[in-house]
Image 1 (cartoon, rainbow, N blue to C red):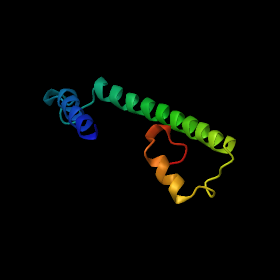
Image 2 (image 1 turned 180 degrees about the horizontal axis):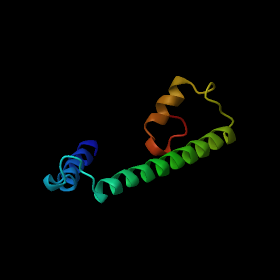
Image 3 (image 1 turned 180 degrees about the vertical axis):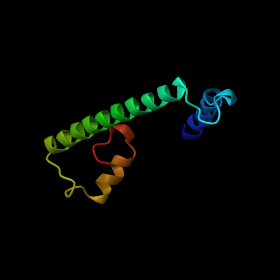
Image 4 (image 1 turned 90 degrees about the vertical axis):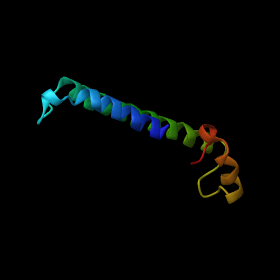
Length: 87
């Protein structure tokens, strides 16, 4: 996925940075991409904070703390991916 999005970014850059806009490349498309990136970063930050809080609450409800997790319990959580309660 990472490589695919990187390649997609190359396609977008090729369409956004046109030779007639050289050498400064001031274009509304660049501003739009920066704004979209900022909004996505804010969204992901809020989502991850929410998800970590949810997982912390679930862990406390089970009577666990990070210190009480054994290596075996952590190993079992690794296979759960997004369903894991401890990262």
